[in-house]
Amino acid sequence: MTAKKRNPRDVFGETLLELGRENPGVMAVSCDSGAGSGMNPFKKELPQQYLEIGISEQNAIGVSAGLAEGGFIPVVSAIAPFISMRAFEQVRNDLGYANMNVKVIGSSSGLSHSALGSTHQAIEDLTLMRAIPNMVVLNPGDVYEVEMCLREAVAHQGPVYIRMPRHEMAEPVEAAKRNLEIGKGEYLMNTGDDIVIAVTGTLTIDGLMAAKILDEMGFGVKVINFTTVKPLDTGILNEAYQNAKYLFTLEEHSVIGGFGSAVVESLATIKGKAPIHIVGIADGSINTGPYRELLEAYGLTWEKIVDRILYVVKN
Amino acid sequence: MQVESIEKKAFNIRKHIVQTVINNGDGHAGPSLSCTDILATLYFGIMDIKVDEPKCPNRDRFVLSAGHKCLALYGTLIEMGFEVADVMDTYNKLGSKVPGHPDMKKFGGVDFSSGALGHGLPIGSGMALSAKLKGEKQRVFVLMGDGEQGEGSNWEAAMFASHHCLDNLVGIIDRNGLQINGSTREVLDTRDLREKYASFGWSVKVVDGHNIEELLNTFQSLPFQKGKPSMVITNTIKSKGMPFAEGNVKYHHWNPGKDSCESKEAQEALEHYAKEKGWAI
Image (cartoon, rainbow over all chains, first blue to last red; front, side, top):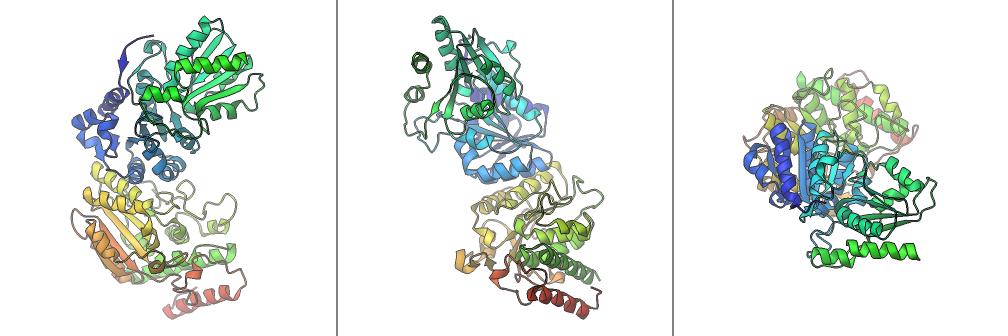
């Protein structure tokens, strides 16, 4: 595991700039959020492809739909709850049902804005976005995935939601060994079938660390990373579930309707003996505080994940 | 000659609206009839569109933000030749190309799907900006209701369009003064829409929405001011063309039944109008 850490917003901004240089149809659309999303280098070098909408997310989605109708590829970014929830109807109707080629970036997603409270935290966005027809939902968990999600999203014809992390993060696996594609899950560890961990987004690193501890304790462990929440890679999931003794899903998101729900929906008709535990945030986030402390309070750090899994397995 | 030709098209569109609701039941007849003359003027006198090339990239665009007025749009597009009139027989039926709100994936000539109010002006603003960025001359027309002005997203787009000097964007408000629950004044008073849009940086004209000549002259003078989006507030009568229903809020939805007195009265009104004009029905 590399110790190198990078800020995902910087990686997003650099990648977007490269994509903008390659294709003049790529438009960066800001809701007074360009700086916070990492779009400043793009704005500086490609001002003709940068559009400031102001604090008006509903209009930002509508304008982006209109631009896409004209052949542009808008990449519209705002803090996750505002773009996915305030503008939900616009995303659903004008991008989803209309199948418009717009990329929606929910920046600082999950508990990223840990100190700012529930208004600025987005732990329901996966539930909402994956219910929208035609919408691809991506949830990067490290800087390699941030870059690849944006590249894949822009190459994909149709609406995409990317749930963008905020805090500095390391890459759990060497990027050169990975080949991220929309709709494909990947094994990050495979030492047996005692415990299968299906993880998405920012908990990938903690999930992998927890898995290594469990492996050292003698359990056979699989870790499958799902960068794409929709369409879910049901093939890799079903295969891992066949012989699993326990399946745990991990997400920095509500347990209602998110990644874990998608996994359960997918496995509902598959024969398997393993009980499925959805590890995430219970009905709503009421706490505020430093990011790691908030994750710990919700049982989402690697130490807490190990404790939770051992409690289940031993009882 | 052009005015009479457009009047005849408007008459034909009204026939489509009335006959569709009589034959198939329950439709937004009142709001569709109030904007019919506007659509007829735009499609047959103003807009640059080609029926044989419906997706021509630099064509003018029309977004029916008040999507429930779709019977008027369907009638207009049928008169243009995008579909045959029989398509309206499927209205209110499973799998119809002409659902209760327009769907761009189902009906050729619909430039953008709509239904939920307050979506059209943002989308139209994006289309207008797209044209500007590409250096194309296309214009974008967005038709809204007056009750629809209660949606805040309209005002987000109103700020945006003037900020970006979108003088190829034309908003149209079908001001018939009524919405589902009563008059717009009673439900949520829009007050002076001319003053409101002017204060948002638009150039505004107020016209009679049933006077084809005035509508033509108004649209021919676009943009009203270089560098500013234009707003045409059209004073209209809900259910225009069905005298017993004109200005009556209960005809927002109309479900007369095939052989009802109201059906006969509506058809007789159309026949009477045609006879006065000397047109064959």
